[in-house]
Image 1 (cartoon, one colour):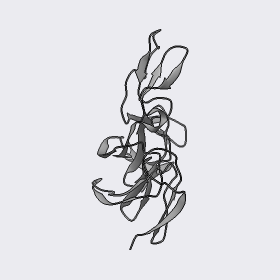
Image 2: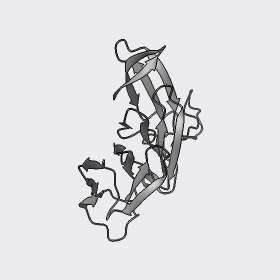
Image 3: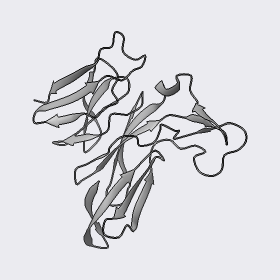
Length: 202
């Protein structure tokens, strides 16, 4: 994701990147020089060598930043999955009784200039719903089918809705309409049905 931030007083094009390691990076676009990095979400035993005995690691194999971030020129919005896995030097498996349906989520707003955290919103289940920003509202959706609209400046919850199934797709905005695909498996929604839902933003 491209953006422009001041570096030593000069407006400079940068590349923002993130991944399953649960870290967000900014690099100068022209030469790849690192500008900053920020660990996001929960971290435990994720640096260094694994022991012979099982260790719980966060973010786990399906944790960290799994889906796209959003950027509006003011903040970088990062969806996060906190899903612990139990590792040894030769094996890996989910560390919760819920398995791949476990874990929690977060959406974090970072200052694009230095990576500092502006606000953080926590969710009961994993945030596989990416981040989509439009008109000062950030939208995301979680694995239990909850769809959220958050104030881009403060992270306050402005609106939420329950989708007819779990969500691990990316909300999209088209004019005054928010489109959400709900079809993720899981025990969260009774009588779940796969649907594309359109929410009015008026």
